[in-house]
Image 1: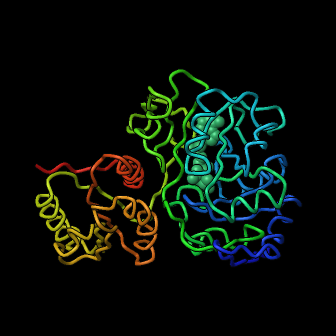
Image 2: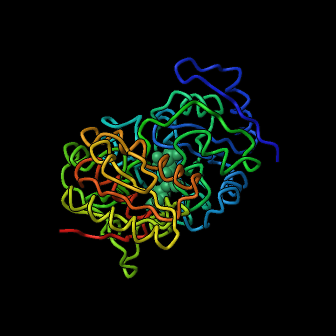
Length: 350
Ligand code: TXA
Ligand code: MG
């Protein structure tokens, strides 16, 4: 298929150009569009055949449900059966924004979106282009991240082009995604509500609004006996082509261990990359070093993670050695994605 690339300025959206994309959605086509978290690959959520094409374009397993994106709360009608009290509190505080809320699904939502579940994931993105696309098309938009299944989520249009050129009707380019990690997913159909995926909104922020929250025990483990409630979490995710290992522990010891590993892997003729931070990037010898940013501003580290994993792929790196970051606040979501990228390979140094 021919793919059309449309460039838009998110601060001054050209509606004539946007309307081309909105018409594609109306007509049952696929549009890759920016959100504040990552780029999404969207189709009219009420058109089952259009949604099926998302799964084909991404190579996504059919048992992994999609998020439905809306532009205003009136759209919830026809998507969900009921809006629980906790959902209202969360929407008041965090929408539009990087929070996906799981509620009981309404009949109009095709089974293909929810993978047969009786719940549906809904999010109102905080991105002017995403909101305008939904509004101008007049439909809720079902969209997973706009990457080939298994690869790191796309944080700019270049990544989308790499993965989906010829597979989507339109790719909108509106610059880099601000958050860089996907939305937090919370299920409010249960008491207490349960976090199914860590992301842009962190646990203490959520607890402040609705009190006690559980975390799906399957999130942080490689224990395959536990079946994750969020089907997407069971798949290999965010994986660079290189084999990745996380090194965790005290600062200097981590650098020492990584330098020792660089020597060992290099002896085997393997090209090594180090995922470092501004505070540590100078410590490494004999490897391609990418800094995720300043440890003092974890949000910038989150924003750079997927980008950096794709950079290593471009540089044909075979082994990635990654410094762990502190597992607090957004660091919890960062490490969640790192564990997945590394297939849970972690070395603890003391
Ligand atoms: O930030 C984001 O959430 C991005 C942007 C594009 O909005 N989207 C995104 O979609 O990350 P995707 O498909 O890559 O991840 C959706 C996650 C998956 O883990 C999926 O299993 C889960 O949400 N999910 C969707 N519907 C669900 C449901 N009814 N119950 C449980 N989990 C669900
Ligand atoms: Mg995804």
